[in-house]
Image (cartoon, rainbow, N blue to C red; front, top):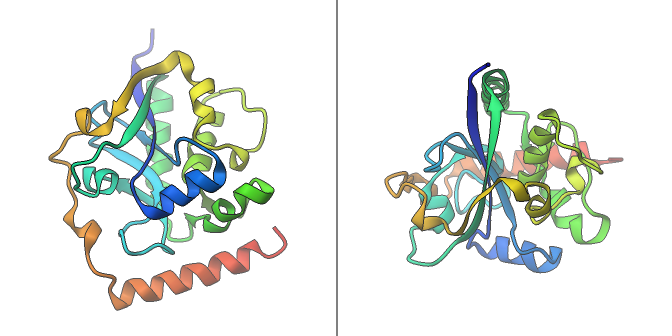
Length: 210
């Protein structure tokens, strides 16, 4: 029998104002989705902003305790699902994440998120939302999806992965508190402002005629 590995899918109510708007407009309990390669969420990845102030800048990033809690003493509700995968699937996922992370053309599909309440999002080349990326992974793991990846919202994982639920509660009780990233709160530099504008322009160009 081949060696089995575990990965963890995490959906959460992140405490930013933007996340609150997404939950309200999208009529969803959870607004964010990520994948972790350990139960303490030390190595956790998602399509998200790399800096708290860079609202327009998004890509595949390695997240931290800071990005989930904003280093505040406030409950952050999460649900964590444990998936048993083969060693081959495990390393294939790691390779996919590394490849996308190293490719600057992959960006966050901000427009899909903003239009979800009206048209249920749309697919754009080399872009993902946080949930779209997770559904993309689940699809390649053989999970039966009934619609395109970009049409899902995090709440739907509650039903799809119900048998895999291992934790529901406050992320502060399970996430390694040493996993902090104070750079997440750095002031928006000129370089980051330029990157934000360039990414927005690139996304506009790709979204035309989606």
